[in-house]
Image 1: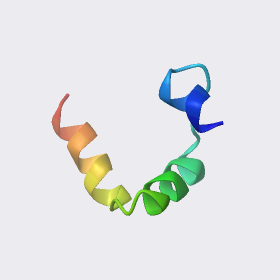
Image 2: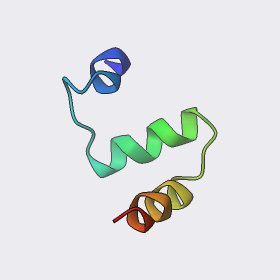
Image 3: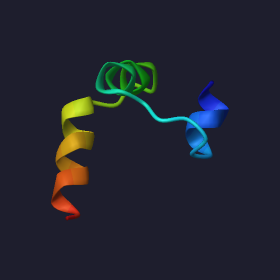
Image 4: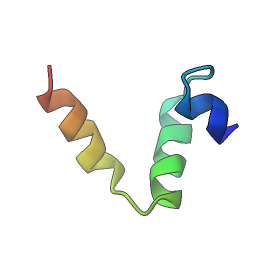
Length: 39
């Protein structure tokens, strides 16, 4: 599953994204802010 997400073959919903961030020990709020700041 992670491989498909990383190459763009599968999308993440919000809850999956949060869980993915937690597994990687990344604060999901910081990632959302980073994404929002690049608009």
